[in-house]
Image 1 (tube, rainbow, N blue to C red):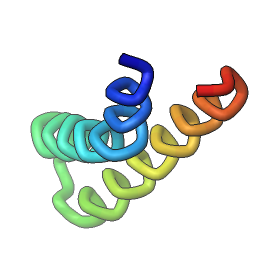
Image 2 (cartoon, rainbow, N blue to C red):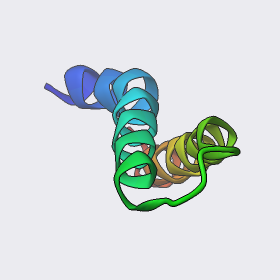
Image 3 (tube, helix red, strand yellow):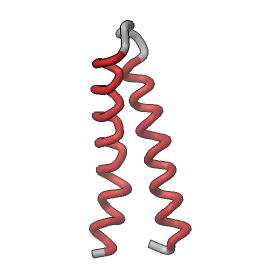
Length: 59
């Protein structure tokens, strides 16, 4: 079970974070430039955060 959670946090969390932020910005933003870059950076932040939690927890 721990391996499934680890794989989900490492591989799928950035994809879900990118999709969420891209859709969020497309819906609420008046400008269309920079949405993809912002979504990638948000996914990178979420990936770093979830990976550091896994490393700190010994997962």
